[in-house]
Image (cartoon, rainbow, N blue to C red; front, side, top):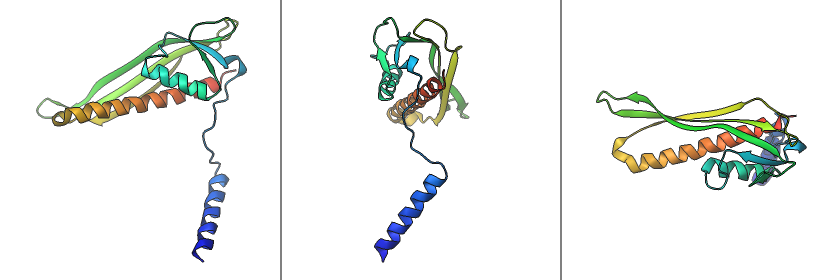
Length: 165
């Protein structure tokens, strides 16, 4: 009896999820002209954001070139900024909360050199509580938040590329 009820509940749950339009995030459907791309102005070998961007593009069927080659689209990085801002200070004039912000601006040119977009800017920010008594934990927390921001930015860039024509 329990097994039948579990199967029935699983079926109802699956039906409900598909009825509401839920689907897993699949590949970014980028235009064919962007299937081979060179990223100018970003170190895709050593920079954390650059590595994540290259890996995500590769997973989505985009061949990322290490050096420019004729016939490849070009993503030109205009700005890649990571900032840490003070959000609040305590009564003892010590920082109690920080905001981490990252901003990435780029433009894309087609393989024949024609601009495919104006400058596109994506940004993300997060704030966190700072405890000066736990400095090692705070630096680890900042690294985790920064990695999460990079992942969010990579997804935003892929979404922007997928709507280009």
